[in-house]
Structures are given as C-alpha cells and as structure tokens.
Image (cartoon, rainbow, N blue to C red):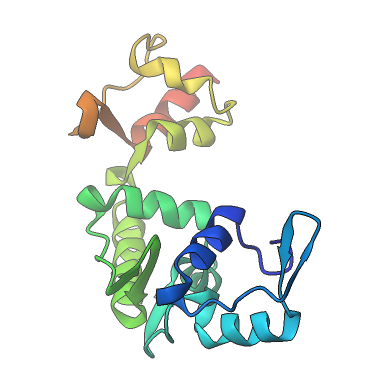
Amino acid sequence: MARYGLGRSTLEKWFRERASTGHPEPDGRLGQRLTWDADAWHAWYASRGPAGNAGPVPSGLASRDELAETHGLSKHALKELWAARETNGHPEPARRHGKALYWDAEEWASWYRGLVSSRDEAPEKELVTLAEAGRLLGLAPGTVTVYASRPPKGWPEPAEEVRLGGGRVRRLYRRSDVLAYAERKA
C-alpha cells in the first residue's frame, strides 16, 4: 500500500475481481495474510498503465495529477475547478475508468488559458465560493461557513446561487466584493 500509494480497498477490489483484472494469484501466506511475489505483482501493476489503470492511457490524455504538475496547480485547486464546472465551463473528461478521470490535455490547457485570461481581464467579475472567500480573508476554514446564514455587518450578498443536490446551495461571491469587505474591515 505504501510503496504504490494505493488504498487497501483498491487492492482488495483488484484481487476480488482478478478474473477480469488479471491480478496475480497469491504465492503463499504469512499468518492470516496472503503474499505475492513482488516482481510478478509489479509486472502486473506496471502492465495496467499509468496509475495502474486498465490498459495504457491514450496519448494526449492527462490525469488530474498530471494537469496539476503541468500547470503548477494544487490537486485541491483542480478539484475546486472541477466542482465549479457548471459555472466555469470546465471540460468534461475524455475518459473515465472507475473513479479515475482523464482529460484531453490540449483541450484542458486551452480552457484553462481562457479562464486565466478572463480573470486577468475582469478580476472584479471573478466569482469565488464561500471557502475561497475565507482564504482570501485569511480566516480559519470553519469561521466563514456561518457567514451564509449569519453574515457580519457589511458582508456582500452572493452574486450567484447554484442549486446543488439534496437541497444544498453554493453561494458565489464577487472576488472584488470580498476584497472590498476586507478593506472596510481593516
């Protein structure tokens, strides 16, 4: 698990579904635990392509980790961009394998350049989530969550509200409004 950065549930699933995954059979036991020949298991894992997916990833596709590395973004930032895809136009993945997502690297890069360009041209129109607003203000993560239901004096109204599943609402604020609030508060 530690050597390959894999979770136990992933490993157990691959073994359970070995008829379809081709996972090697164990070569012995150590107490109650099954054991495998390390070279044989590594060869099987490497044959699955990047990150152990079924088959090699076609050329031109990039995982979230690869996009993060290429564009100098954190994995968290990429997850936030994906979560806000309804408002930011994030491209759909070109390939899905289980929970793994892969995007057309050129399409994603083009979209991201456009996003950055639009932010540079009109940063006052850039929308941020409540959590992002909290980070802009340097607040502890849990502090700003109450602002939606109990806003402090001078807190800006949301510029947009997005209905999510389960009756939840994502409130988006103009970055410029949040920064103006910070100026007034200082």
